[in-house]
Amino acid sequence: MNLLEVRNLNTSFHIGVGTVQAVRNISFHVKQGESVGIVGESGSGKSVTMLSVMGLLPEYADIAADSILFDGREMTKLSKKALRAMHGSEIGMIFQDPMTSLNPLFNVESQLTEPLRIHRHMDKHHARQRALELLRQVEIPNPEARLKQYPHELSGGLRQRVMIATAIACGPKMVIADEPTTALDVTIQAQILDLLQNLKKETQTSIIMITHDLGVIASMCSRILVMYGGTICEQGDAREIFYDPKHPYTWGLLNSIPKVQSRPGEKLIPIKGTPPDMLKPPEGCPFSPRCRCCMPVCRMYMPPTVALSDTHSVACHLMHPNAPKITREG
Image (cartoon, rainbow, N blue to C red; front, side, top):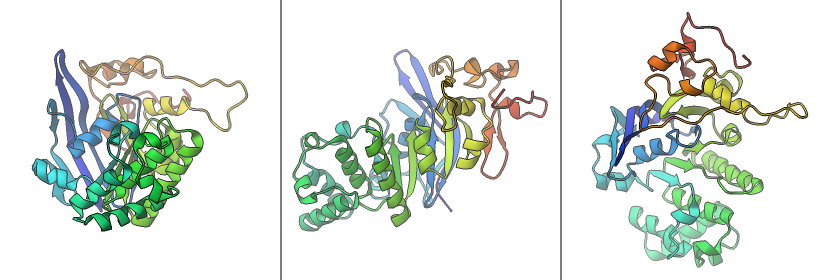
């Protein structure tokens, strides 16, 4: 059963010099209890996609979709008040930088108990007891003392744990984690990922993981969306994306990370060029200016999405029967 189903989502920002086409005609779904990863370079539209679903973008953003269905309800038809009621109670979000997401003027107790009092109508005493339970759940030591502390008094790892506790406070059906391990050292990253995995197992919460780190995706997610230039260029389960990728951009991402079996002195292969200017995106495939497999048709027409299996689909002209047979190795 699909918990979230998005069809033909488009998001643009109207600014002084023109219109930024941040997300262009994307469709995807998330099943109940599933972990889905959204991966791509900075500016590919990952965070904007989920902020569009949440309705958390500024007024100068234009969000249009044929449908955004969450747990059987059409979100595009909900009022702002109804959307706000869903935030925290049914959809939680772990934002990218906990230092700027947590309010520096309020202690941990105030920020943890607020959603409980608003969405679950708890009194002060029961909200505080629930806050203590949450801090224990996210494995924060000495939770009674931490409740009285302010964000600047906590380490980066503890702040991220407080953000996770806030996101899951009301028992949401889905949690969106936007770069949850950014700026954390490797040991703390592993602890945060283990924590999210355990929460998923215990509560059957669906998790959407937004990241540019393929290592994080590999350890966390059963299905992966690869985004580039505001579009989904490839999606599939983890095995298909890591062991049988079909899009040249996915090849580039995988070739640019170190491998355990690499030979001594073997160099990584970067993706040459820069991401497209979304004020004036390419007419055809957004990856065509950087693609080593680019054909004339790639510059002229956006490729259709081709289904390779029930889970694997690719938007690339190389999938055409008459296209050259090019592999990841060349």
